Length: 246
Image (cartoon, rainbow, N blue to C red; front, side, top):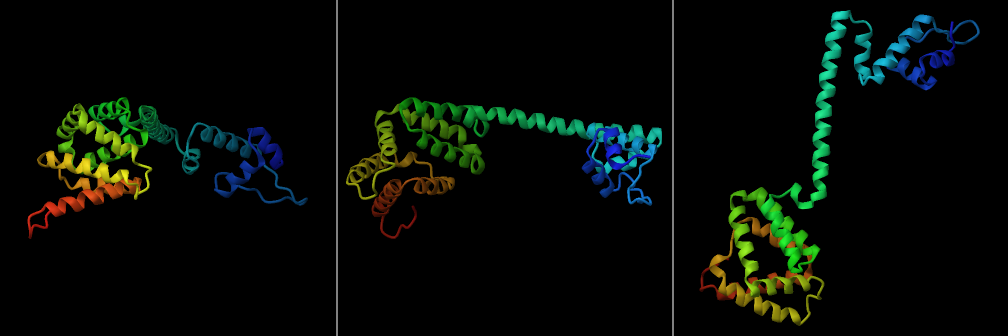
Protein backbone atom coordinates (compact mmCIF):
# COMPACT_ATOMS: atom_id res chain seq x y z
CA UNK A 1 0.00 0.00 0.00
CA UNK A 2 1.24 3.45 -0.89
CA UNK A 3 1.03 6.84 0.78
CA UNK A 4 -0.10 9.76 -1.37
CA UNK A 5 3.52 10.90 -1.67
CA UNK A 6 4.65 7.49 -2.83
CA UNK A 7 1.74 7.27 -5.26
CA UNK A 8 2.60 10.65 -6.76
CA UNK A 9 6.26 9.70 -7.12
CA UNK A 10 5.33 6.43 -8.84
CA UNK A 11 3.34 8.26 -11.50
CA UNK A 12 5.75 11.18 -11.79
CA UNK A 13 3.27 13.82 -10.64
CA UNK A 14 2.94 16.07 -7.61
CA UNK A 15 0.82 15.41 -4.55
CA UNK A 16 -1.16 18.51 -5.48
CA UNK A 17 -1.96 16.93 -8.85
CA UNK A 18 -3.20 13.75 -7.17
CA UNK A 19 -5.48 15.80 -4.94
CA UNK A 20 -6.77 17.69 -7.97
CA UNK A 21 -7.63 14.39 -9.67
CA UNK A 22 -9.50 13.44 -6.51
CA UNK A 23 -11.37 16.74 -6.63
CA UNK A 24 -12.50 16.36 -10.26
CA UNK A 25 -13.46 12.71 -9.76
CA UNK A 26 -10.80 11.06 -11.92
CA UNK A 27 -9.13 9.13 -9.13
CA UNK A 28 -10.97 7.58 -6.20
CA UNK A 29 -9.85 8.81 -2.80
CA UNK A 30 -9.47 5.98 -0.28
CA UNK A 31 -10.67 6.17 3.30
CA UNK A 32 -8.13 6.86 6.03
CA UNK A 33 -6.73 3.87 7.85
CA UNK A 34 -6.56 3.42 11.63
CA UNK A 35 -3.45 5.60 11.79
CA UNK A 36 -5.18 8.43 9.93
CA UNK A 37 -3.40 8.02 6.59
CA UNK A 38 -4.85 7.32 3.18
CA UNK A 39 -3.33 4.24 1.60
CA UNK A 40 -3.37 3.60 -2.15
CA UNK A 41 -3.36 0.28 -3.94
CA UNK A 42 -1.30 -0.78 -6.93
CA UNK A 43 -4.45 -0.34 -9.04
CA UNK A 44 -4.58 3.33 -7.98
CA UNK A 45 -1.01 3.72 -9.20
CA UNK A 46 -1.92 2.14 -12.55
CA UNK A 47 -4.97 4.40 -12.87
CA UNK A 48 -2.93 7.48 -12.02
CA UNK A 49 -0.29 6.61 -14.62
CA UNK A 50 -3.02 6.18 -17.25
CA UNK A 51 -4.57 9.53 -16.27
CA UNK A 52 -1.21 11.27 -16.44
CA UNK A 53 -0.40 9.68 -19.81
CA UNK A 54 -3.71 10.77 -21.32
CA UNK A 55 -3.38 14.28 -19.87
CA UNK A 56 0.17 14.59 -21.20
CA UNK A 57 -1.13 13.60 -24.63
CA UNK A 58 -3.46 16.59 -24.59
CA UNK A 59 -6.69 14.80 -23.70
CA UNK A 60 -8.95 17.20 -21.73
CA UNK A 61 -9.50 16.10 -18.13
CA UNK A 62 -13.24 16.14 -18.76
CA UNK A 63 -12.79 13.37 -21.34
CA UNK A 64 -10.32 11.18 -19.45
CA UNK A 65 -12.86 9.61 -17.10
CA UNK A 66 -14.84 8.08 -19.95
CA UNK A 67 -11.68 6.85 -21.66
CA UNK A 68 -10.47 5.05 -18.55
CA UNK A 69 -13.52 2.80 -18.63
CA UNK A 70 -14.05 2.53 -22.38
CA UNK A 71 -13.91 -0.69 -24.36
CA UNK A 72 -11.11 -0.94 -26.96
CA UNK A 73 -13.34 0.05 -29.87
CA UNK A 74 -14.89 2.93 -27.96
CA UNK A 75 -11.44 4.02 -26.78
CA UNK A 76 -10.09 4.07 -30.35
CA UNK A 77 -13.07 6.08 -31.60
CA UNK A 78 -12.80 8.55 -28.74
CA UNK A 79 -9.07 9.02 -29.31
CA UNK A 80 -9.67 9.57 -33.03
CA UNK A 81 -12.22 12.25 -32.17
CA UNK A 82 -9.85 13.94 -29.75
CA UNK A 83 -7.10 13.82 -32.37
CA UNK A 84 -9.40 15.56 -34.87
CA UNK A 85 -10.17 18.27 -32.33
CA UNK A 86 -6.48 18.77 -31.64
CA UNK A 87 -5.77 19.02 -35.37
CA UNK A 88 -8.47 21.67 -35.67
CA UNK A 89 -6.82 23.65 -32.88
CA UNK A 90 -3.44 23.27 -34.58
CA UNK A 91 -4.92 24.61 -37.82
CA UNK A 92 -6.39 27.57 -35.93
CA UNK A 93 -3.08 28.33 -34.24
CA UNK A 94 -1.26 28.05 -37.57
CA UNK A 95 -3.66 30.61 -39.04
CA UNK A 96 -3.18 32.89 -36.04
CA UNK A 97 0.60 32.66 -36.49
CA UNK A 98 0.25 33.51 -40.18
CA UNK A 99 -1.82 36.58 -39.40
CA UNK A 100 0.50 37.68 -36.62
CA UNK A 101 3.42 37.36 -39.03
CA UNK A 102 1.58 39.67 -41.40
CA UNK A 103 1.54 42.30 -38.68
CA UNK A 104 5.19 42.88 -39.51
CA UNK A 105 3.90 44.32 -42.77
CA UNK A 106 1.85 46.92 -40.92
CA UNK A 107 -1.02 48.11 -43.08
CA UNK A 108 -0.99 44.99 -45.28
CA UNK A 109 -2.97 43.09 -42.64
CA UNK A 110 -5.91 45.47 -42.95
CA UNK A 111 -5.71 47.01 -46.42
CA UNK A 112 -5.22 45.94 -50.06
CA UNK A 113 -1.80 46.33 -51.73
CA UNK A 114 -2.71 49.44 -53.74
CA UNK A 115 -3.64 51.33 -50.57
CA UNK A 116 -0.47 50.14 -48.81
CA UNK A 117 1.52 51.41 -51.81
CA UNK A 118 -0.26 54.77 -51.53
CA UNK A 119 0.61 55.05 -47.84
CA UNK A 120 4.23 54.27 -48.63
CA UNK A 121 4.18 56.94 -51.32
CA UNK A 122 3.00 59.44 -48.73
CA UNK A 123 5.94 58.52 -46.53
CA UNK A 124 8.33 59.07 -49.46
CA UNK A 125 6.84 62.55 -49.96
CA UNK A 126 7.71 63.46 -46.38
CA UNK A 127 4.29 63.01 -44.75
CA UNK A 128 4.66 62.31 -41.02
CA UNK A 129 3.99 58.86 -39.66
CA UNK A 130 1.24 60.32 -37.48
CA UNK A 131 -0.59 61.62 -40.56
CA UNK A 132 0.00 58.37 -42.44
CA UNK A 133 -1.64 56.46 -39.60
CA UNK A 134 -4.60 58.80 -39.74
CA UNK A 135 -4.85 58.25 -43.49
CA UNK A 136 -4.65 54.50 -42.89
CA UNK A 137 -7.59 54.72 -40.48
CA UNK A 138 -9.66 56.57 -43.07
CA UNK A 139 -9.01 53.80 -45.60
CA UNK A 140 -10.01 51.18 -43.05
CA UNK A 141 -13.29 53.05 -42.54
CA UNK A 142 -13.88 53.29 -46.29
CA UNK A 143 -13.18 49.59 -46.77
CA UNK A 144 -15.78 48.77 -44.12
CA UNK A 145 -18.46 51.22 -45.27
CA UNK A 146 -17.94 51.79 -49.00
CA UNK A 147 -15.58 49.14 -50.43
CA UNK A 148 -16.77 49.64 -54.01
CA UNK A 149 -15.37 53.18 -53.93
CA UNK A 150 -11.88 52.03 -52.96
CA UNK A 151 -10.28 51.56 -56.43
CA UNK A 152 -11.41 54.93 -57.79
CA UNK A 153 -10.51 56.69 -54.56
CA UNK A 154 -6.99 55.23 -54.73
CA UNK A 155 -6.62 56.49 -58.29
CA UNK A 156 -7.89 59.94 -57.30
CA UNK A 157 -5.55 60.10 -54.32
CA UNK A 158 -2.53 59.13 -56.38
CA UNK A 159 -3.51 61.72 -58.99
CA UNK A 160 -3.76 64.38 -56.29
CA UNK A 161 -0.19 63.71 -55.23
CA UNK A 162 0.85 64.18 -58.86
CA UNK A 163 -0.28 67.81 -58.46
CA UNK A 164 2.42 69.94 -56.74
CA UNK A 165 -0.07 72.38 -55.18
CA UNK A 166 -2.18 69.61 -53.68
CA UNK A 167 0.94 67.97 -52.29
CA UNK A 168 2.15 71.29 -50.86
CA UNK A 169 -1.15 71.87 -49.07
CA UNK A 170 -1.21 68.32 -47.77
CA UNK A 171 2.26 68.71 -46.31
CA UNK A 172 1.34 72.12 -44.87
CA UNK A 173 -1.66 70.59 -43.09
CA UNK A 174 0.55 67.81 -41.82
CA UNK A 175 2.98 70.35 -40.35
CA UNK A 176 0.16 72.26 -38.63
CA UNK A 177 -0.96 69.31 -36.49
CA UNK A 178 0.50 70.70 -33.26
CA UNK A 179 -0.15 74.38 -33.89
CA UNK A 180 -2.26 76.34 -31.47
CA UNK A 181 -5.82 76.63 -32.87
CA UNK A 182 -5.42 80.43 -32.75
CA UNK A 183 -2.11 80.46 -34.60
CA UNK A 184 -2.41 83.15 -37.33
CA UNK A 185 -0.67 80.83 -39.79
CA UNK A 186 -3.86 78.79 -39.87
CA UNK A 187 -5.71 81.74 -41.46
CA UNK A 188 -3.44 81.64 -44.49
CA UNK A 189 -3.67 77.86 -44.65
CA UNK A 190 -7.47 78.01 -44.56
CA UNK A 191 -7.38 80.60 -47.37
CA UNK A 192 -5.19 78.35 -49.49
CA UNK A 193 -7.26 75.28 -48.79
CA UNK A 194 -10.50 77.10 -49.53
CA UNK A 195 -9.15 78.27 -52.87
CA UNK A 196 -8.08 74.71 -53.64
CA UNK A 197 -11.49 73.43 -52.61
CA UNK A 198 -13.27 75.83 -54.93
CA UNK A 199 -11.07 74.67 -57.81
CA UNK A 200 -11.74 71.00 -57.13
CA UNK A 201 -15.28 71.32 -55.75
CA UNK A 202 -16.81 69.03 -58.36
CA UNK A 203 -14.32 66.26 -57.69
CA UNK A 204 -14.72 66.04 -53.91
CA UNK A 205 -16.16 62.73 -52.79
CA UNK A 206 -19.10 63.29 -50.43
CA UNK A 207 -19.55 59.70 -49.32
CA UNK A 208 -21.04 59.22 -45.89
CA UNK A 209 -17.90 57.64 -44.52
CA UNK A 210 -16.17 61.06 -44.80
CA UNK A 211 -18.11 62.25 -41.75
CA UNK A 212 -16.34 59.57 -39.75
CA UNK A 213 -13.02 60.54 -41.30
CA UNK A 214 -13.60 64.19 -40.40
CA UNK A 215 -14.40 63.13 -36.87
CA UNK A 216 -11.19 61.12 -36.71
CA UNK A 217 -9.21 64.14 -37.96
CA UNK A 218 -10.75 66.51 -35.44
CA UNK A 219 -9.90 64.09 -32.64
CA UNK A 220 -6.27 64.11 -33.73
CA UNK A 221 -5.64 67.86 -33.68
CA UNK A 222 -7.45 71.03 -32.45
CA UNK A 223 -5.67 72.92 -35.23
CA UNK A 224 -7.12 70.58 -37.83
CA UNK A 225 -10.54 70.98 -36.22
CA UNK A 226 -10.25 74.72 -36.73
CA UNK A 227 -9.32 74.16 -40.37
CA UNK A 228 -12.35 71.92 -40.90
CA UNK A 229 -14.64 74.40 -39.16
CA UNK A 230 -13.25 77.30 -41.18
CA UNK A 231 -13.69 75.50 -44.48
CA UNK A 232 -17.23 74.37 -43.55
CA UNK A 233 -18.16 77.96 -42.62
CA UNK A 234 -16.89 79.35 -45.92
CA UNK A 235 -18.63 76.63 -47.90
CA UNK A 236 -21.89 77.47 -46.17
CA UNK A 237 -21.46 81.16 -46.99
CA UNK A 238 -21.11 80.27 -50.66
CA UNK A 239 -24.40 78.37 -50.73
CA UNK A 240 -27.33 79.99 -52.50
CA UNK A 241 -29.97 81.41 -50.15
CA UNK A 242 -32.35 78.71 -48.91
CA UNK A 243 -29.97 75.88 -49.78
CA UNK A 244 -28.98 74.11 -46.54
CA UNK A 245 -27.31 71.10 -48.15
CA UNK A 246 -23.58 70.76 -47.51
